[in-house]
Length: 188
Image (tube, rainbow, N blue to C red; front, side, top):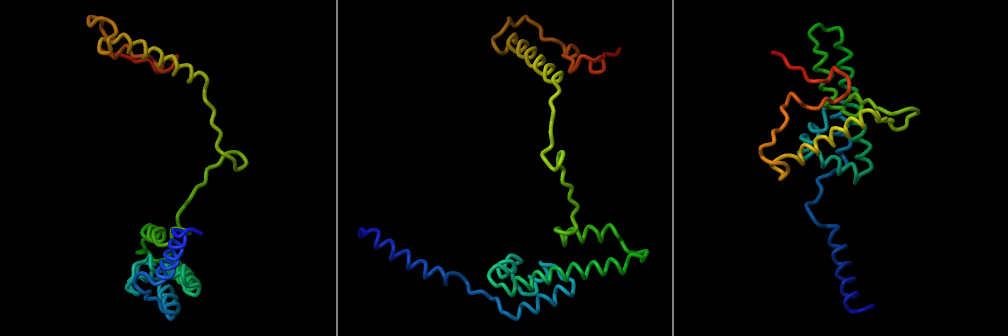
């Protein structure tokens, strides 16, 4: 091992030891587990729970990553919060003043994973969606591109034909298909 490699290794070990203690100390306490479950049972959302602890909501997710007991309690609190609001909705179904649309929007905002409608679109047997190009449409597109290229080459702005050459009027535009429905019509 060279001298540079040895000094790098020693420096790296120093920073690895130091990195464990860098930053503000965590305000996490084990008693937060019981408190967060009680908050969920009262129907509080994640943002409200974070405010009760005087932390950002990302901190709750960080604590759940670092502390297994808090992770379990946090998951239970979110489930309890959803259950609280489901019970509230069920209890008010027959109430004439209950605003169901507002309730649904609130539930979709609070509990996206379980209350947001999702439609998965797949092809046959769950495979990808098959697309088929219409040969006639492709031929029409190629013909239009070729015609427009010819017109562009003949344009005086591009150094084509003389400036006395007139450009076709918009009413002389190329039809998109051979049928008469797509041909331009003029009145008057």
